[in-house]
Each structure stands twice: as C-alpha cells, then as structure tokens.
Image (cartoon, rainbow, N blue to C red; front, side, top):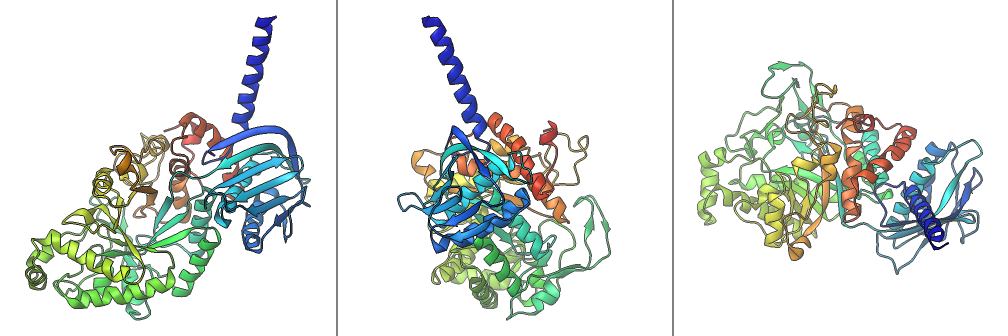
Amino acid sequence: MKRLLLVIFAIACAATAYAVEYANVIVPRPLSCEAIEGSFALTPKTTIRATLPSLVPTGEVFAADLEVVLGNKLVVKKSSAKKGAINLALNSALASEEYTLKITADGVWITGGSERAVFYGLQSLRQIVAASDITAAGTKISAVNIADKPHFAYRGGMLDVCRHIFTVDEVKRYIDILALHKINKFHWHLTEDQGWRIEIKRYPELSEVGAYRNQTLIGRNRKSKLYDGTRYGGVFTQDEVREVVAYASARYIDIIPEIEMPGHAVAALTTYPHLGCTGGPYEVWTRWGISENIFCAGKESTFEFIENVLTEVLELFPYKYIHIGGDEAPRAMWKQCPHCQKRIKDEGLRDEHQLQSYFMERVERWLNERGRSIIGWDEILQGGISKSATVMSWRGTKGGIAAAKLGNDVIMAPNTYCYIDYYQTSDPAANGEPLANGRRPVTLAKNYSLDPYAGLDEHQQKFIKGVQVNLWTEYVSTFDHVQHMLLPRLAALAETGWSYGNKDYADFSRRMHILRKLYDKQGFVYAPYFFNGIE
C-alpha cells in the first residue's frame, strides 16, 4: 500500500510539474508561473477594465495588438474591476516594472507597480492568447498565476538607419517587435559616414547634402568594386521623429538617439567641410568601413556645430541618455592638424588619445549641464573617462569589464553575442543565408549564452545595467531583411535581460516554437533556421 501511494504521489507530482511547465508559454521566461485549475473564456464581448484613467491608453494599445490575434477588437472601459473581464490595476507595493497576472474562470487580473509594468503583463497575456486555439467565438485560456519582474533595468535594441534608411511605419514596426519582447530601450543610430538621417533646422543643408550618397556598394566591402550608380538617402523630419518618440512612449520604450562623434562624421563633413582637419573636399561615403576623416578637435567651430545639433536633439528626445558614439575614430588627421596639435598643447594633453577624451568629456559636460547623460562605445575608455559616462561594450566584453572595474555603468552589447547583422548559422552558404557580416556567426544559442556578469565580482556586477542587440544595416536594405536578422535572436537577448538567473535553453526552445504562432499571426518575417532545426 505504501509503495502504491508513493507511485500515485509521484505521478501526481509529475502531472503537476507538466501542467506548470506547459502553462509557461511566455518569452522572456517569467520569474514565477503556476498553473491553477480552470480556464477563462475570452470572447468578442470580453471587456478590458482600466481601474485608473492612466491605464486606459495602455489598454487601448493592447486591444489593438490583440485584434490581430483574435480577429476582433476588445472594448476598453474606465471602470472598477469586474468578473468576466480583463482587469488592469496598479499596486505601489510592486516595483516599477513588476507585475502579477492571474487568470481564473472568473476573469483576468493584471496588477503592476506602474503603467509600464501593466503593459508587460499584457504582453504576457497576449502570448498566452496567441498560444491557444482561437475561433470566431473566441478562445479558452488556461488558468495561471504569474509573478514577474525583470533582472536588468536596461534591455535594448539598436537599429542603424544610416547605411540604409527605413520608413516611419517600418521604424514603428521595429518598435512593435521590441515591445512584444519587453525590450524597454530603442537605440536609434542616426548619423554616419554614409548618411545623416535627422533634420536639424539650424543646418538645413544636412538634409539636402549629408543625407544622400551618390551610389552604394554592391556586394561585400573590401572585395567588391561594383556600385549601383543610384543616388540614395533620406532624412527623418523633426515631426516624424516626434511621431516615432510618441509611438515608442505609448509602448513604454525610451529612445536613445545616437549622434556620432568624433568619427563616422563624413556626411556632416561633406556638408560643412570646415569642420574637418583638412577642409575637404569630402564625399558622403558610398561603401562601408572606417574613414580617417573625422571632426577636427582643435576648432571651436566643431564644438559650436555639435552643441547646436544637440540642442535640437534634446528638444526631440526626452529620455535622459544621448549616445555620442566615440568608436572607430582614427587619429591620423589629428596628428597632422595644426589646430588639433595646438589644442593638445594648450590643454596640457599627452597625446591624441587624451584629445579624444577631451572631446568626449567636453560634450558630456555640456549635456550634463542640461540634465542629460551620455553613453559611448567602449573606445571612450582610451585616454581616460569621466565617472559619469556609461560604456556600451561592443568589442567583446573586455571594455565592459574594464569600465565596471573603474566604477562606470555598463551596457553589454558584445559583437560576439549581440551583433545580429552577423550570420545566423554555422554554415551560411549551405543554409542559404543572405549576405551578412562575414565574421563568426551569432546563432540563437550563442546569443542566448551571453553572461553579462562574466569576469566580474559581486561588487563590480552592480555596474552592469543591462544588455542590447545591435543591428547594423550595411547589408540589410529592406525591412523584411531587418526582421529576418532580428527574429528570433531578439528573443534570446530579451530572455537574458529579463530572466537572467532563470534561463534554460531547452525550455526557451520549447517556448519559441509556441511564440512562433504569434510571429505568424503578426506577419513578422522571421529567420527560419532555428525553427527548422538548423544552427
């Protein structure tokens, strides 16, 4: 009898474990997900009840997103919670991004520490609904009790619109994809050697000259000498930028604009040659790589230009961070430039490395005086760095480790794990991948394996603020291709950012095959390799 009871108990435990595991269909993986008895009937007549006016817009965004899944749009009402409804509420005892989601036969209750947290709870609900069997009459979703919050405060996705530009609607679509995965930062790369992409009213020529290149390289950089012979470019007007910022804000995504300096500045120099060391002439670049022509650090006119540009940028982007680049800035021109050499002498600097530090810290001080903070690529460590600068580690993790040891805040975005312009499989040619960056591939499993804390002790880990995927677009000219490179790898990064310490690749793989149903319903153009068993 005792043995029989033990067997029954073991079977019951296994069944419970299976039920809990099956209940968890969400990416990124929730902190806690418990299956409970029953199910909720979600029908076209189900209402979304916002218990506070501030939750109505959040409910409206969710209703619009869910319409694609359900086939009908649920009505959002400002009212007290009711049985049979999807109820939204706030609880100040929860952290700002923490939420609870409870589904019972009587209704759905989502409670968050802020409107942002409620939005994340709704994204989880959206995935649960998409995983169910849906008919014209609605669907039944299994009862579950979820308690969830993210590990990292910064969870980012970057899009380069300089090498290739995309429409406002396409940028919004990119933001939609970020929001689904609970990404909360959009790093918008707006200026480059190959094109200036943001309207600056004080400098209208940037939109007329710097925003266009005469032609574009065909094929792989450094190997091809073929060009398409077609003028290419475009610019986002300030009204369009405001539209995108508002759209992202409604989805609780902060936008971080990047204005590159002192390197990757050829588009600006082509427009205003006096800002360079030689005075030009310059030409907006038609191929990829690194130009030796960078902003002159010895001329006051350079800093006047940058401050005037940033003045308008600050008016457009309310979030506290501004990314000011700092990467891939060769200093050969500075070594030959009398203005730069005079600056080194007058400021008592040791060399051109310290001149770049002078450049970056001067811009940082100007931004700090206006209540903003900077992010820079890990090259800003060269020659010294201020304690208030945030370092984005891209050349592997070494820069981030060094910055954390100095006590600087760090965002981990190492190319070896997080550059999703890289190939996605171990044999790109055999798997029919489109042209991509030719370095080692970043497979979904590789991306998922990132440990942002590796190499750091407990104290130093406190300076790692989050993670980010970066999508450069040298070889990505259409938005379908953007999505192909972004998905499903964004999901892996999202799970590292949200669920660090609670990751399991096998379980992630299971949930991704379920999330694929939502990708299909949304019409996302994801890469098929992982889903076809190829990495």
